[in-house]
Image (cartoon, rainbow, N blue to C red; front, side):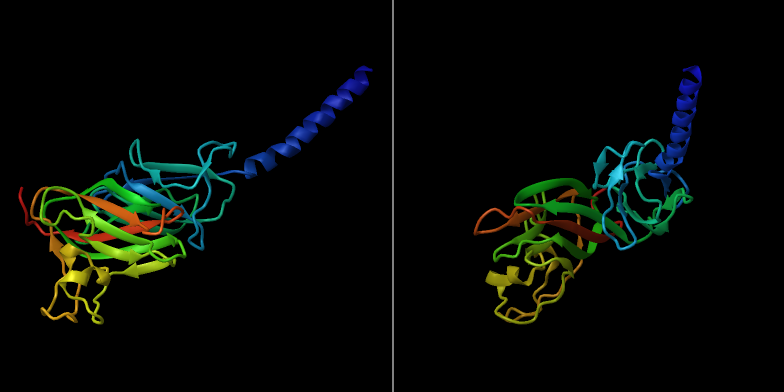
Length: 273
């Protein structure tokens, strides 16, 4: 009986030993530190993790891979970003700082442990939009920020007429409008779109919103109804202004719509200090 019990114990130990490597290989741990141009660590950067095809991957906070989520990770505790995943394949990473700095690293492996943010002349501020209604983002552009471009990445769309996106600036100022930066951008189809000059149609002052170029960043070259409406840079010359967005559908709620807005700007040194 003792021999049989001892044999059973040895078999069980052998099975556990064989199972252990499989358990270890089932999860991979990634970590890196976000730093600025001076090699100082950056807390509060929002980092999105993608696979090699730029699809959002499933992340986990535990080794058991039982706490999945797909959202961005915020760097903290000395710029640390870390997660567990079921794959050991390299990933693509994009990080955005509160000051408009940004960094990107493609094919980041488990052996790469630093991502440097670019805080040069051009800054990029990113925020997500989702579903219907109006929302304040809690993200501010500083006084003196000159907005040079706006790009919208429509990730999920709603294929029905009347679903549009406005991007605005909050506050008490002439430029504080729901459509200050983006006006009635169609959300029917997914994809990336940059605001651009519109030249056709009756685009006089009464219907200028049809150009999608926001109120603060458009300029009518002539007073005629068919005047081109090119994008023009806008400098925030008052205190910091908060970014807002509004998703609307006259025919009903626009649920299931989502994507990201990218505001390209540079610190001009102008404005109230």
